[in-house]
Image (tube, rainbow, N blue to C red):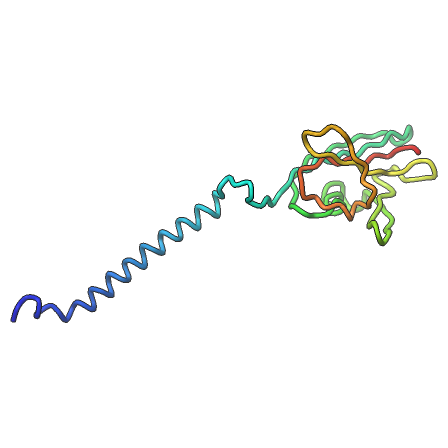
Length: 157
């Protein structure tokens, strides 16, 4: 009886052990790649952002209610401006009026309430631009999907 014939009954066992070892190596490789891509995403422009930076300015030029507050915050992308206002200054520090097509329009922030001559207006601009754009919709209709400068301004007129 030759050497090969004597140990040929162990060939299936050796094949199974080698297969298990190769599957283990492949699993480790895929785990490492998954870990690296999850915690260190490639700097790809198509990689979707999950947070945006919002610079929120709340100012009043009313002689009885002069204030100017600024808040720089990272927020989850696509929350509404009203949610951000709730998280930043608190739900008790503002009031509003709901209009079906435009959402919530702010009527009071802190102690400055709208009256016949004074009203709250929302303006925004993107970083790198200097011109403020008036937002003719309510704060609940504005989605924070970009890096914005947003200004709530209490103005006469």
